[in-house]
Amino acid sequence: MKVLLVDDDRFALKLHTRLLVNFGFGNVVAHEHATDAVALLECDTQAFDLILCDLQMPGMDGVEFIRQLVRLSYAGALVLVSGEDARILQTAEKLSKAHRLNVLGALKKPVSPEQLQQVLKYHQRPAAKWPSAGKTYSREALSQAISGDELVNYYQPKVNLVSGIVTGVETLVRWRHPVDGLVCPDQFIGLAEETGLIDDLTRVVLSGALRQARIWQDAGLQLCVAVNVSMDNLISLDFPDFVAQKVLEAGVPPTSLILEVTESQLMSDPLMALDILTRLRLKRISLSIDDFGTGHSSLAQLRDIPFDELKVDKSFVHGVGRDPSLRTLFDASLGMGRQLGMKTVAEGVEDREDWDFLRSAGCDTAQGYFIAKPMMAAALPCWIEEWEERYDNF
Image (tube, rainbow, N blue to C red):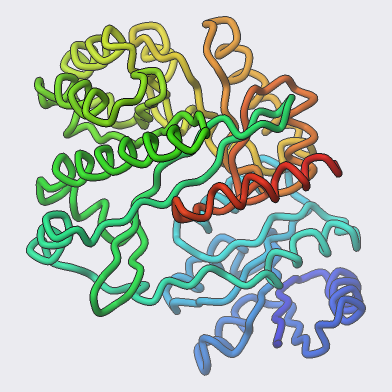
């Protein structure tokens, strides 16, 4: 494994090199100037598996260097380091992720061995690989997948933070492509929205999730099943009646279904959304505001729409216990949810530190890779047994 260090501070270069060597990264190349590092990458973009980059550098600064990594289609891992204000560091991290770079973390100088080891452990984890990553698909292919039973639901557990009891699951769709294998939702949800197929897709996913909820119910598992809905669903006046009919056909209580609505989706036609969402609540269907804190009119939506669950976005959850800025935002979101009588769910719980903080903060429910990755329905009962044993040892 080859590592590239970019920092105008010679002491920092020596320190980080020594730390990396101590952690088993023996092949480390260091440069004081970002322009030299870019020239090296021009020769072989993928020569380095990991880059540690300072932000405040003369000549080409860290943000400009990030731009060059994007231009060069760098596919390795990136760690940002800086002695600048933590908010600047966070913004640079967000920018890098928005460019779809594989950012392991952002560390404030002076970097401690513990901090560096913490972010490097994510690099050593095997990344989830999708067989068809990067491939694009046509509307016709996706339409065939929807009508041809090629979509399959995966389910990610949601756990009560006080009792450890599995209270429900979020439904996450995958495309079981006959040639490419399992296709991730990032590669077809956007296509479905752009080509007018998202309503058909959502209805297939919803119907399958309700049928599965009945199977679990018959097996003695009382689980709430959450399904994501699109703005296109919320402009179809028959959608509440469709949902109610599918709940009736499945033979499960209406309260066992949660519809998760991303707040940014509500903004295009708030009046129509208000009509449809209110009717859904009248039919005893639970509503969750998803990815809370990432849109533009969260407070107005909390005021106007009868949500009964608030999901705090993962960008405000992972690392919240060690980041004062994140903690402020998380506490504000949690406080609003409580005052409005809403259940609170934290998504993106990645490690035990996240779990312990959320539990002490009084959040109701947790979801994330620390608990479990999305899984097929058949795997859930065995996983619950394993989780209960694991939780008993917390």
